Image (cartoon, rainbow, N blue to C red):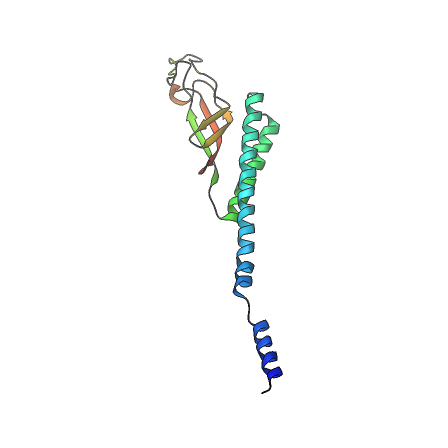
Amino acid sequence: MNRKMWVALISAAALAAPLPGCVDRQVTEPTSTAQWSVEAELAQLKQRVGDLRAAVQVAGRLTPGLQQELASITKSIKNWQARSGRKDINVTQMTHPHPGQDGTLALAPRGSGGGACAHCPPIIVSGGQVCFLQSEGSCPGPFGAGRICVYSCIGFLSA
C-alpha cells in the first residue's frame, strides 16, 4: 500500500472509533441534568411548604384556599416521588387527642357538656415535619379525652 492509502485508512479508523470522553459525556449529562431537576423540584416543594406554613400562621387556620394549596402540594409531592423514586419528602395523616389548657388530657366529668379542652393548634412543627390541622373534633373527645385533632403532615428526611 502506498502512503496515501495508509493515511486514509488510519483517518477513517480514527473517525469511526468513538472518543471515550464524548461517550461518557453523552451518558452522564442527562443524568446530571435529571439529578439537578429532581433537586430543584425538591427545593421548590420545600419552599411551597414553607410558604403555606407562613400563610396558615397569618390566617390562624387552614382556610379553604389554603386547603386547596395543601392538596396541590400533596399531589406534587406524590408526583415527584413517582418520577424520582425518592422519599426525601412525604405526606402522612396524624390523628391524636389534644391536651387541655393545663397540658394534660382533659377528662370531662360524666354528664358534663364540656371540659377543659383547648382548640387544636393550626400547625405543629416537630422533627423535620410540619403538620396542618385538617379538622378538630368536639370536646370532650372519645372516652372523655381531650379534643381529637386530625392533621396532614409533610415530612422531610433531609432539612
